[in-house]
Image 1: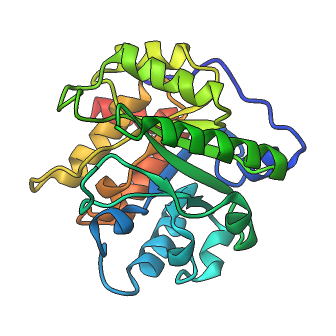
Image 2: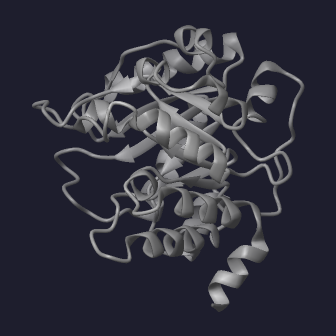
Length: 277
């Protein structure tokens, strides 16, 4: 059965509090974030106007925020951000690198706020050969966010040569959430543990909101339905939201998937209806 967690997050009248309210729902405090920073990593996600077209659709669908690099954000109609928050991604790395898990800072919090961002995000791969540098970058960004009043979303993953392709482990996810909390994140994005019960244990260990990644889009004809079902299952763990990128922008009908996920995130009744369908 789907249920919201009993903990609620108090909203403070501060720079961070005000900006947090722009990337979360005013009533539920929950969020549907759609990351679209993948073009630095893998190349173009579509035609030249893809970001503008997709962001407009996501805003109409009820997504709470989109993640973009600052250069790409300049190619999106600003009116879309009157209905949806902008999170500027500060990390970068490519699939053409000799170290696929290396991430470097390519922008700063002040740069993001200058173009109108509501929050910033940083990607950290624990287990990468460059883990030390990535943690140092996270600490530096966290301090800058505190000084400038900007919310910080940290995308925490266990990646690297020693980990191979092991499935996510709840204890490992809880450790990643603890790192993000201790180093000053306001929200943390994690992989899904694989079942609501073990994911709930991760949620209960973490004092900051957890958003769960959707992972790669499913490679079959019912991929859109799979994305919605996965979102509903994840939300049963009591997480604060979803951070679904490829499951949304690579969907056959991105608007339909995003709007359904938005209803699930913010309405327990919608999730119950889906479970009983």
